[in-house]
Image (cartoon, rainbow, N blue to C red):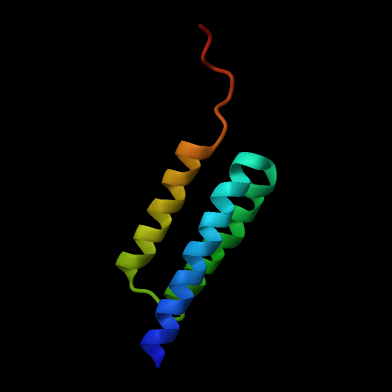
Amino acid sequence: MLEQQRKRFILDTLLLLDDWQASLQLDPQAALQKLTQIKQQYRDMLIADQVDIQAYIELMELTLISVMTLAPRSGGENS
């Protein structure tokens, strides 16, 4: 039962991340504010022993990759 709850919590978090990725393209400011909430949720999962450290690191890496690839680029590139 605990393992099933753990898997469900992780799945819910991944769905939240998917929603966040979509919102990053539509409203970058709101999405970046929501990033703080998502990172706190990851920390809470780790502290509550719902994920191990490796899963926590993978979730954080996924979030960082999303920020780097989906965030609008600032105008530093002139052709």
